[in-house]
Amino acid sequence: MNSKRFLLLFWSMLLGSATLLGQTTYSFNVAVDTAIEANATVIAGYVRADTPPAADDSVQISIVGSLPRSSHMNPQSPYTIYFPAGADSVPFSIQLYDDTFPENPEHVHFHLNAYGTSDSIGAQNTLLFVLVDNDLPATISFVIDTGSAYLHDGSFSVCVTINNPNPFYVRYYTRTYDSAFVTPLGHFTALGGWNYFYTWGTIWAPPGVSTLCQDITIVPNSDTLPDRTLMVVVQNLDDNILTDSTFRFTIHNDNWYYPPSVSFDHTGMIVLKDTTVRIGIPITTYNPNHLAFPFIVDTVGFSSTSTLDSNILAHLYFNGNNYFNHPGGLWHDTVWAFVLDNHLINDTSTIVFRFKGVRQNLSPDTLFYLTMIDTGALVISFKGAGFAHLKLDSIGYVQVYTSGPVKYDITAKVTYLNGDAVMGTDFLWRDTTVTFPANAYDTISLPVTMLRNGVHDGNKQINFLLSDVTPSTPRYDIIQYTYTIIDNDSMAVWPTGLDEPGKEAIVQIYPNPFVNAITIHTVASYYYAIYVTDMLGRSVKVIKDVIGDTTLPLSELPQGTYLLRVESVDHSFTSRITKF
Image 1: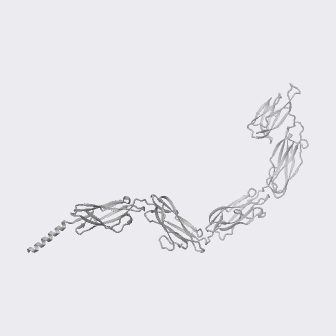
Image 2 (image 1 turned 30 degrees about the horizontal axis):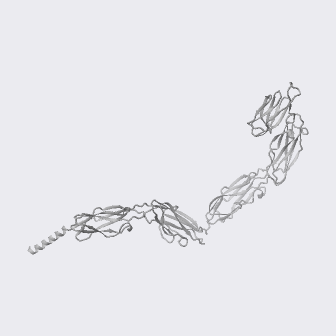
């Protein structure tokens, strides 16, 4: 080897060794780092030099790909990192921006690049930076997922419920899909701008739970096409939680007629004609149309020995009329029938009612059978089975009444039947025919004159009979009446006893009226008995073997009028007493 070639090889090796001795290798000190969005400026990592540079040096950091949201950090790329001479690492900082949009964690990839030819990049040349959001996701959903309206309703409100846990407003986007769009959500037939209007756009929801509504404006028309459909959707502008994010809406064409369903809830009813005035008949109607439809409930037949109008009004009525327009929807209601009572005894009647005037009725239950059993409602009777009368009152009355007004005169006979009282001696009476005028609701009182003789001859009774009612259709109730005469016209003066002949004393009763007790005062020196009866002669109190004054407790008696009789062997005294 000659000297020139050797020198050339030596200088080449020397220069190569010098180049290798001055080269620095740079790398990231970690492969993954994480930061919170609200942390402002953060140190993402460090760039490490395997050999500190002898002089000031620099490297570059670039972003691989694009930022998911460029507003979250300073997007300058590439970054230049300056290494002072002798430094073995330099921090790598980025500036973060805190927003108010809920987001999922975002990933940013940084790549380390050599700045000069004298430097090299190590194997750890990529940094994955994870940005975690500090905002909470809101929950957004439709209140209902389907709805409908009729063509002439004008509008329909579509409402969304938002639960926003943040102290700031959150946003979502709403829009529609209709026949102008091909979408996997389904096929829709409504056309925006022709069948409806709906404003697309961003909606801002306040903190907390709120419900926000937007109107679908329905465009009326006169066509008879079937129903139209569309879909309203909620879309995420951020990373909120969407549940029930679709709302399917149907526009019913109320120019189109759908058959209604009108039915009686029951097939029939049995009533007593004499006790029933108004009959409620329940019905159910379903009108699927927007417009009301008319129907009539009327009679279509009857089975009776008398005319229809004598049993029931010629038709049923609803709110005063048997014809009405029923609005859309499902309704439970009542129609009413008024029964007419002629106060005659008729055979059982059956009347058939039917829905009429409906173009087409889907329900088969359109007939109702009303059966009326006539028991003969008119009653003529004595007013009570009997009563007790004091002879000293001179006149008492027997009363006869009818249970209701009638369209014609009714007559009946009231006659003396029997009894231990003697007509002409104990009382005066004349058999009578009473007349109840047409349309009258009366009670007729017939007088009985009681004759006084000043002698105690005991209580006596008279029985009267009610008979021969004309016409014969009314029925009887009480046809025999017992009239009791209480003998109280004897002298109320008793002898004082054998030890004082010729001296008399009057029986005194007080207080009268009374509340709890009554006192009987007499100067008689022999025993007597006390009898208290009600005005029908029924015994309510008896005390025997009484002598002198006595107080009779009567607090247990109800308020009313009673007869008190003081009776000895030879004398009797009767008085009417009243309890308050």
